[in-house]
Amino acid sequence: MESEIYAYFRLTGMEFDPDEVTAKVSINPTKTWRKGDLIIARGARRHKENGWTVYSQIEKSADLEEHINSVLEQLQPGWIPLLELCKSYAAEIACVIYYRSGSVPAINFDKSIVAKVHQLNAAIDVDFYVSPEES
Image (cartoon, rainbow, N blue to C red):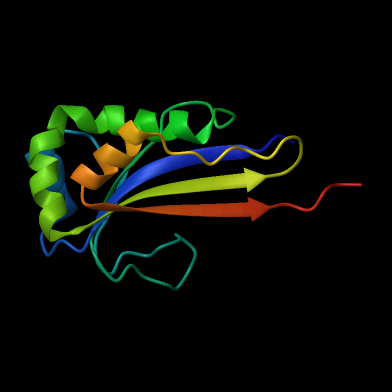
């Protein structure tokens, strides 16, 4: 099985309902949650704060940079109001790589990505998971 890669933007820590973020930025999120919602439907753990996310919309075999660019492009229509929200709440670009076999996926952030993440006042988080080879 090939490696899988995706990225998403996450905004957390708002005291107000995540639907208000949607209304302010006029972007439909991939997922939202409210403080107290279950993290996993069959689990017992609950979210400790409200959240709003937009995931990359491309094939999971694409490069990490392409996934980040997919997310940033989706955020463009609401960029200015989003920048205002990011001044007050926790913003993050999260990158997830499940490495299974083949060449190791590149982790590279060109200057334009770094500049946009900086404008968002966002952190970058990269989670790299290595799956054992199947015999």
